[in-house]
Amino acid sequence: MSTTTSATTDGTISASEQNGNRRPGLTSGPFVRLLGLILALVILCVVGVITAGDRFADIDNVLTILRLASVIGVVSVGMTFVIIGGGIDLSVGAIVALSSVWATTLATQQLADDYHWIVMVVTAILVGAGCGLVNGVVIAYGKLVAFIATLAMLAAARGLAEIISNRRTQIIRNQDFLHFFSGTVLGIPTLVIIFALVAVVGWILLNRTTFGRRTFAVGGNAEAARLAGIRVKRHTVLLYVLSGVTCGIAAVMLMARTTTGSSTHGTLYELDAIAAVVIGGTLLIGGRGTIVGTVLGVLIFTTLGNVFTLNNLSSSAQAIARGVIIVLAVLLQQQLAGREGRVRRARAPGGPGGLASGGTATAASAPTP
Image (cartoon, rainbow, N blue to C red; front, side):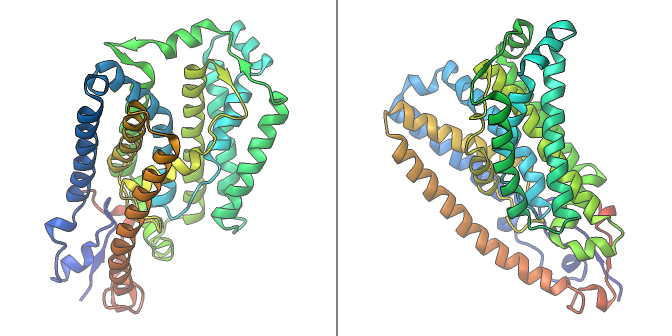
């Protein structure tokens, strides 16, 4: 009997369902996973109100949390695509630094003064996209392991940023640029609005487009995706370019927040972004993840840091708490990954629901949930 397999946004396997096998229970669905993240965020907020009182609940403090979460949140959205596609990007922090430095050189700022400050924005995004393109080509066509390729880009981009800036902090002189990005819309900081827009666009791209469905398919089973007609190498390149573009956007936001471009910008962003993505429920082995989960993961980490700061707790204690949370999240992922692996083996060629038994991979055309 012919079966149809499909990749869904939460990585659940519809083939087994169509074969009449056991359906995933309600407690294993993406909704419950997101509900758990929301519950964790609510508990953190309750702890913040109890321990810091009005200082935590103050609207200015809430906006501060959102403003701090916005930059790393944009980077994390791009990281989510890469990890769902089965890769990893350790160079995001260095790309943010290089983009900020390149966009704030004297030549770039002079062009911005002569024409429009948008020149600085375009420069940062193009630099980020270029770095992502190099990462993608080296990984997809050079067959270099993503961990090594992006680690090399981390070192090279940070070094190039130091050479361009001569290890000096470059001050932004264009007041129109600063006024635009430091402003508010209906009381909401522009940086927070940009983060929201990037998250919405990312959600649509991941869940409502062929590109998103191919990303799940490539991350879930690259060979099956290739057999389904997906150009896996080209798609891998596009995923890293997308990550680079989000790094460029984050660089612009960081430039606006600090009024500078510096080779030290984005330090350890790669770890924060990966941690937020993992906390958000995206599998490190690829094939499953959500933008909403990543956004909640970023908010949980940022709120945790804010609660620690308001209670005058040391950064060391905060780091320990973060480490514990990451370990717990990874342990939970291992349980989920083990279950995913058993299901994937059942679908693999030669397996009970695999291609060899008559199944067809139609991930690229699978309906979105």
